[in-house]
Image 1 (spheres, helix red, strand yellow):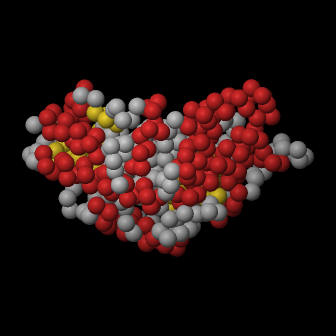
Image 2 (tube, one colour; image 1 turned 90 degrees about the vertical axis):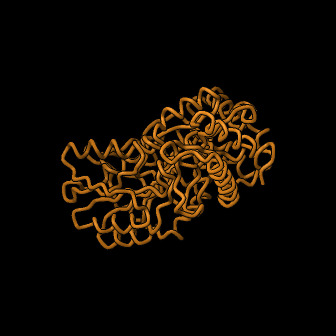
Image 3 (spheres, one colour; image 1 turned 45 degrees about the horizontal axis):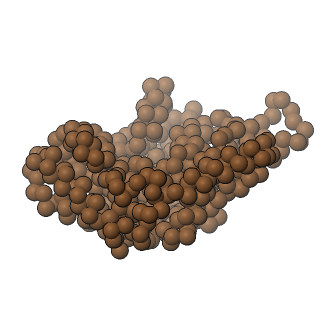
Length: 392
């Protein structure tokens, strides 16, 4: 599956990022963009220069192409998707739709990404009850989250793949049922899943859940391409944080200054005027993935191969557990798209690797190696050999 130019000879299509010359192992955070992404940036400028304020029809079409790409990775062809520049932008709009006076409790884990960790911590300071359930052991996480849901709970926030450990959270369908009975909203962060772990919304029992994600990581769309997938009952909600695009289709109607109307569908959670350049870039990358058969299944197989190779190469180093170790209790299929090593000095090892031209990253005690489909086996093995040298 892997050759000297990566999966299917992909490396040649990433010449501007020089992926064949560099050891880019931060793919779980920021993957390289294919060269065609530059065409999208140029097209955005050309459309604006030609059409000026009439560019928006073309820009909205690009946004629809990005939505279509997300729908394929959600296995949800009719998914109602609001787009945003960041997941934080979308989380704020969603939080503003909850009645936190009547149901002042939010349940989450202690393993959520910083966007949610920080925002919920600040809400806790402001008086909202925040319940943080330990993410470990992950095997019982969904059950333990469900046990915290009661009639005071507005929502439960959980990741499908934990960003520090790479563990996939099982049993989300059980949690979804518990929320449906409450009823509390279930919000699943799929950012670290899409592009490396197949995420079929309905098969996972998440038909009535909200799903957050974006393309900055494995989907190679770059910044500014995030989404919020809405369940059908979203049409009953009225977010307090709302932009004028939420009534874009009704602007010509007669309005009362004191009346706030909402569009139907995902536009109900829309913001306001935005930079469409990211969607132009994203639309070109979506087409690139289609042309090169970069599907959820093919990308999962490549990810399992690459993470498995990294794990075997790490084991061959025979480093003391006190220096660096990995979770060997779970099967490969129970992890996402990166190898997470628990280290005595993760930040120090990251810095030492960076000095040798190996880009990784660290989060607390975890050093993360994130491969990408354009990397070759030899590059992965070389990167891990450098770890052996700096840690030995």
